Image: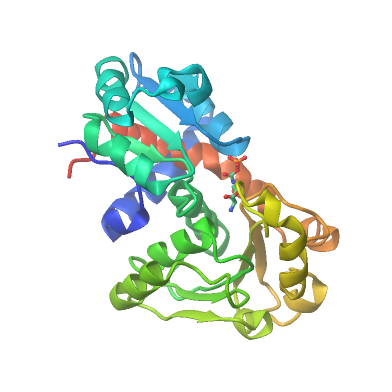
Length: 308
Ligand code: CP
Ligand code: NVA
């Protein structure tokens, strides 16, 4: 049976730990110029309804480095745009390629694609979730702090896809998660409820960013205006004003706190130049790791090392 990555709550702690170990090994091999092409002859299709820099480039380069091939497919250039169903698209692509990464507005669409595909489907971001990003972020934390266990992570800002995936990760792994979001912009209620029920460590949702970052080892944030929310820009700028990651906020966390951002950053909005370019920031190491973590995912999922 094929296995998808549509959300982190469908992965076990063991699977996530294996991804982190494999990513570390693949990163080491790349640094040492070891040629490693386990996906020779395999093809990955990328269907992206929304723009992307990191996710698209890192998946395409990952396939190339592992000896495989990738196809970038814009839905506008496919028969999907003329009414072919996602189910039929899934059935047909399954006859040609070995895996699909989908970036879509609707999580339901990604789930439907996976339901009718006989090959692994990987969520490259939906309005609800961004699982590959959070696997990457936890891998980066392990690299920098030596572990995720017992680490306090404070997410400050919009209760969006990134925040929801943080909660799902916390439902499997033993780190402490505090999410600070303005009222009306909290993470998905069902995801928080389910994650709290299953989590080995505290998951807290609050409105005060200063309370959330108290004794934090990691502060992370994301855009206040996710893709698809552009018409709410002005309103959101006012609502999120107090949620900026700046020197005053970072000073409330541990002295050795690390600051993360999935990028793209909106400098001067959710994060200041001083912080993103300052001594606490690890955002570009974090961005680099998308390549290594996704190589691990592709090797395991397309290379037949994972079974449901
Ligand atoms: N962080 C992230 O997913 O970036 P892109 O939108 O550039 O892929
Ligand atoms: N929450 C952001 C993440 C971008 C990588 C968005 O959905 O636009």
